[in-house]
Image (cartoon, rainbow, N blue to C red):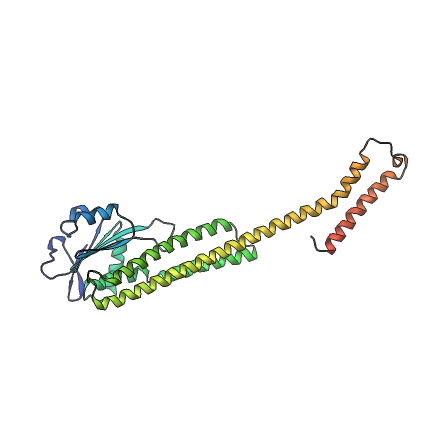
Amino acid sequence: MIYFLSNDTLIEDSVDNISLNDGKSFVCVITFQQLPKMADKLYINDKILYECFNGRTSKFESYEGFDYISLKIPKIDNLLHSSKRICIFFTKDLLVFICEDESLIKEIISKIKSMEIKFTNLSKMLYIFFDKLTSEDTYFIENIEKEITKLEEGLMTSKEDNYLNKIIILRKKLLKLKRYYERLLNIAESIEENDNNLIDKKAIKYFRMVTNRSNRLYQSVNNLRDYVTQVREAYQAQVDINQNTLMKLFTVVTTIFLPLTLIVGWYGMNFNMPEYGWSYGYPLVIVISITIVVICVVWFKKNKWF
């Protein structure tokens, strides 16, 4: 997709009409498969071509006359899904989005057109891209918080299962978001520096808003990671309590049967004891055993040991 700015609006055009010498400003959306064939027409040199295919996934670099941005964008409503990589080539009159899937940029452009936003320059288009990228993230983060709260309530009411597995999944999601917002924050701050003076001074204020929002989202994710850690510690404490209760029960049972074991060992010896010849000897041992059990149970219940 190729667009050029005319009367503050985006108009679809052809790549054959791209020329940076006639004063027009162009916005291009292409895939990585299309990049090698269109690199020359889009004034993308071999170094950037190499960076797009082999460079780091998240970076911002200013070169002579242009800026280059690389970013991996997670699917915010399905964080366990693989992230999509996007590269941005930006000059004074040309803004190129290079992506694995054009649907993300097409969706953003369609939203822009439906809102009838006026474009005075490419800086605003770049700002709107980053703005739309994070505009609804707060709602998804709130949903994650609700998910953690539900997990915590389930821990307290013992209605939730597979705590450990759910905690691990939540930590994976939040770690992915943390890295994403951390890199997005670094990129936004680098754009604010505007080393090549490609960003309009008025647009710098907008990018400061993107930086502040990215920072808030980053802090929110860190807070949620701490929240998950607390839930995990509460879960571990609950597991320890259950284990202690079980061990207490085993200890009580062992203590009750310890005197009975002594009696069994005592009368199991091969000695001719006087009680063997007594007609009430066997019933007496039974009564003594039952008495010991009853006394131990009463004693433990009185002291609330079980």
